[in-house]
Length: 235
Image (cartoon, rainbow, N blue to C red):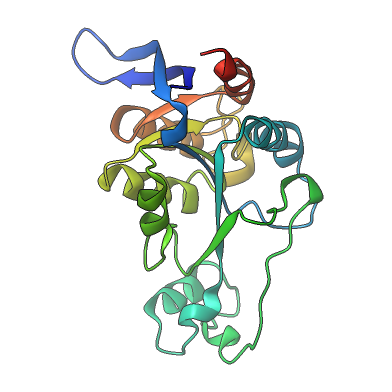
């Protein structure tokens, strides 16, 4: 049976630990799916182009299954939506319900940079809130494919990608995050959480990643993943 040997990192949250652990997991290739979370958008993005795109190219060459999730807030666009009420206060200077503004919009199609655009046969599931599992058919398709392990990339580390991964492990999927295939440095920081002295660039990034690595799943890097998947045919 074809397999992939992937180096992983996690955080040991116990007395005598409190440090990173490193291992190599050997996993059945056919039980793996590469999941891209909210990588849509046409604006040039160095992370998408230089880290996510090479990983996706390697996945396609090796024949691993690929799935996408993307936001489509029309699914719940309604003046009474509470998320829209909250975001109107926290993300919109006008205070308007952001979801209510999308009420009645007839059509939406996500756009992608060419290097990460979905291909024919690659499922792309619309979602209305952070998790790619909530009120979608992602889980049903993953189980139909026999998926046990998800390799995850995308955005954002503090919201949609994080919640998607958390719900995945809650549904008994092994989650391996490509940690350099998401937001870099200050991209998801608030002005008072930026800290150039931290390797993660700020406290939100640091705590979110640390919380992931001790509670939700494992991490690896794009380069390690590309190398591992390139060697998978030899097993």
